[in-house]
Amino acid sequence: MNYLIFCLIVGIIIGIGIFTIFTIIENFTDKKFDNSSIFFLLLLAMYITVHFLNDYGLDIYNKYFPTNKTTSKVQTESNGLQLLESYKCNLDYGVRGVCGIIKNNSPYTYSYVQVEINLYDSNGTLIGSTLSNINNFRPNHNWKFKAIVLDYDAYSFKVENITAF
Image (cartoon, rainbow, N blue to C red; front, side, top):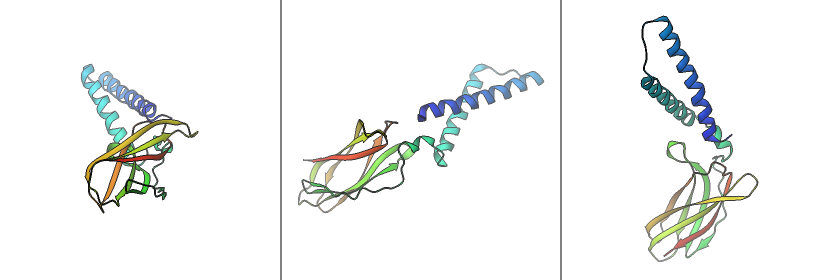
């Protein structure tokens, strides 16, 4: 199930519940609610629910891009830059990502370094890519990169290239 569809279903269920509560209150009291206040409360309830689901690990969408730290120990080196590890991770606000560590084994300070990552669906079909970059990467230092994965169909990844100049 796509995460956006899941959020929409949860929002509709919450909306029906809040609407029912307001209807009951209006029928048993003289209080009348305007549509803008009901709409605001619906949005607030949806927002709180989605963040609750993300904060407590109930985000169903992660079954498509599981983020247990399965580290890729394949160490590739390009331009003196060594990929030490890469893994799926959760970033801020429930956003999924690819994280890892790159070490600068060269004697150079690179003014720009970029890691390029291909994304694949559960069938192994290439569906997109992501990247992360950094400036002024000094020799004998490590860079903990984080690349955002916005494609909800992404299931796996592969670090394709590390570019530096």
